[in-house]
Image (cartoon, rainbow, N blue to C red; front, top):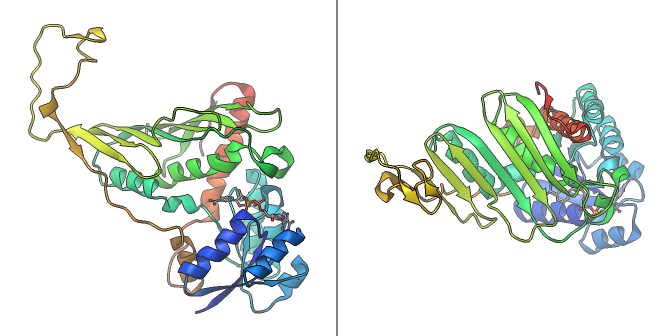
Length: 351
Ligand code: NAD
């Protein structure tokens, strides 16, 4: 079935949704847009869209059955609830809300109206993430026990509305929500402990350089780092498993897996080993023949698969991939991260 979509908020991401759907998603047509800024409305018209004079006019269009909300974060809740109550299916940009209580209101509206509600957690379709998920799923490095996931830049303060608390700015809500969502997508066990350090290097209002530490009920622990003031980057992913290590260095997915050779038997002398680290057996280099290097699994996901799933769910052909209940779990972790940073101590939880 053909679906017709309108976009609220035609800024950077609104324009991206339009282009990406038009290019890659056959059974969704983007009809129009509304934005509070005249320049954004002009941009939407230039891109061939119908522009609505108001949200009311947009919601009154009987031809549209799907709305994408790509506004700053603080207006997601009222807009999502309004669209659902007008009988529309809704896709909302991340972070879907400023906290878990807001999201509970939105989920209640979707249950009340029976309309589809999903969150654009497009980074579940990132190639690096899919390589990590597949490596763990297939047991290639045994059981993972440390995961480090980082995004690092050096361009300074949070840009535009992202620099203001009242708009839901800050790094945790901007990138933290993606990195936490990815971790929780591949780890169904509960988060049992959260600690965090949220620095405000470039102002006093929002966090911009942050580290978050999560411990899961299955023993896995994860360190997430997001920075805007890093001039020498660490790998995007570094994962320790019981049988090997995975590294993905960057967005191009340069990286490798190193694990124990299946046939090599380690034979160690009783003597201490003299290394650059001093006399140590533990940190001495492992003999080359005892390990093997593997290339990373070949994964080729595409962000447009998100919308293909939305259309298929509306047509009754698939189950929704990004569910609001999953986003609620992520939002509860985010609430706990803010609390842990404020208290300056780890918080035990069951999320
Ligand atoms: P932006 O500032 O470029 O665009 C936001 C637009 O919303 C602006 O044109 C603004 O005029 C408009 N707007 C503000 N209030 C409005 C309202 N009440 N009604 C209608 N329009 C309104 O911001 P952006 O970078 O496009 O971010 C928008 C959303 O997309 C945010 O939630 C952000 O976190 C998210 N985002 C997601 C990704 C991703 O990869 N999933 C990437 C970037 C941004």
